[in-house]
Amino acid sequence: MASIILNTEFNQNMNLFLFQLKARMNKKIIFSVLFTLIIASLKAQDNYEIQVYGAETVKANHTMLELHSNFTSEGTKQVSDGELPTNHVFHETIEITHGWNDWFETGFYFFNTLGNNGRTAYVGSHIRPRVAVPESLHWPVGLSLSAEFGFQKAEYSANTATLEIRPIIDKKIGGLYLAFNPVLDQSFAGPDANRGMIFSPNIKGSYDLTKKIALGLEYYGSTGPFFHYDPYQQQQHQLFIATDLDLAPKWEFNAGYGFGFTNSTDKGIFKIILGRLF
Image 1 (cartoon, one colour):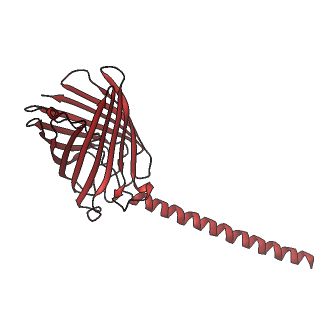
Image 2 (cartoon, helix red, strand yellow; image 1 turned 180 degrees about the horizontal axis):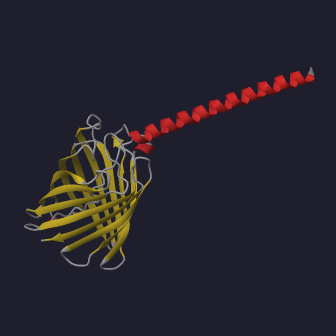
Image 3 (cartoon, helix red, strand yellow; image 1 turned 180 degrees about the vertical axis):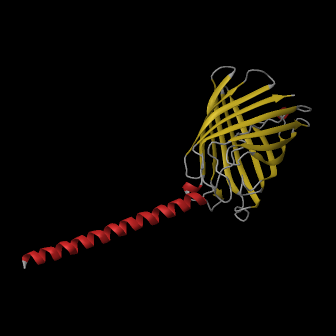
């Protein structure tokens, strides 16, 4: 009789254990599925031109030709909002900027991507007029304002028509250089079209190690609409260790490696900017 009672209690305990184990496994499966869906729905990055702007415009009657080359060493690996993944992709952007006088310039961009699995293509183009406070006025800080508008293919940016308003403030204090770009982004077509202006601040600080070499940090972020900011992991926060070389008066060189800190930010990007003034 005691043996029967013990077997009954054992079976009841075993059934309870299996039930609890199954419940825990189901919770883990549900959590994993939800987590995957959340990650897949996060906003992707547009890493075609990674640059904190200085206030100075291109000199009158001169043209600056720049090549922005970026390689994503650790990026997205799944299609999100119809966008192709960014992992192990090269972005090549050609920027042509002409200075009309000492306070006005116009820039043109041609975005391209190079990658496997059908990810090599011309992506889109932008135009960017910019006005600046002339240096001849001797303001205590550099100040300019650009408005960049254009289109890009949906496979590479879910927001296919966008406007960027970029105020630019900078200051040189001895060997220290500081620049702040409190950028506002507006989408006219795509998932962000009805979200209003999105705040995307860029900040740079560098120090001249020599007359030719400067070393510093560059921050790039996107926090969501004003007063309705996205949850932290859906925001974009990226920090670059970067260097600027001043090897010749008509040449420009900037290079750096960036680290992403949120789920919606590519985790690793290497960038080079090479420019030549004509």
